[in-house]
Image (cartoon, rainbow, N blue to C red):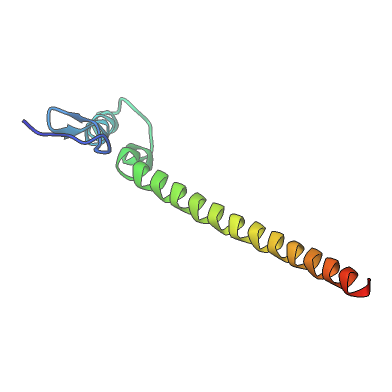
Length: 91
């Protein structure tokens, strides 16, 4: 019996659900039951990779924006500290 982790794709009888969807879409396309383009017929294969890529890009952008915001906050804090120090020196 195969032990499946929670991150593995859904399997139906040892075959990925994505492979089964691709086979169903391809059969429908070949036998003219569907007028989908081949790009869409093969989408269950490349779709998960595209989704993973989009999530990866979103995470990188999120980290970039976070670092940018933190840099601006640090500059504001440093400006406030300098301003306070100048006031303390004048007194």
